[in-house]
Image (cartoon, rainbow, N blue to C red; front, side, top):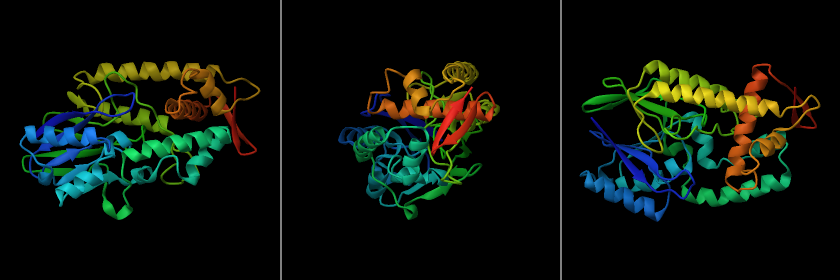
Length: 318
């Protein structure tokens, strides 16, 4: 069973995205790239270089539902005629727009984000959403933790790795300890825990950083020897990356909690202080809010800081 990385361009600052061709019956694509003409044409070319046509694809497996990873899913499926799309059912909310739901707006308000900024975020997402085709619930099949994707000459085990998004999944080949993990682990970037409604109770916020740390530990137990991420080159020393991530998370925790005073502060105000250069950027602003709130949630769960609700807004106190 060959797992072949194919790099495709994206319009995002993160650069190219890696999608993976599993060249074994049933021929499978893990992620597909954004819905742009450039990415679509290059995907077809790179598949052909490996002796594969879009019509040969039988499965489309998505690590998560961000536009750079899932944008071409519907187009590839329709071109393949007989391909089935798989994604974790905690991820389905993302398929209809991260910033379009009432729950998402409410999470921003609770973080103290001004209405004018929430509207700006909505307008930004309208542009970003053009890079994917929304899927209805009946158009995909659910992935579950410990499921097995069977091939003619091998198996990929599904590993649910929530954190970057609630339904993020990785795929592990036990025979040689190869891991395909989307944006869960990247060589040169520490993934952002994106703010999301809790998939079990959408009135609550998903505790993304706590879940991400647990996912890292889960992957560490697998002791992967080759890690294929969603961006950048492969990783051959997971242990080094793991410890680098832990150090980065600890440092960011210290920085975030250092801005929390005794008289209280909102997540929005913390984001402006931790990421002063990003807060005015229309794309990076959302990530700055997400990461700040994720760290505040984690610090509150560890009882490092306290949190209370004042007129529907969360106030964090030393």
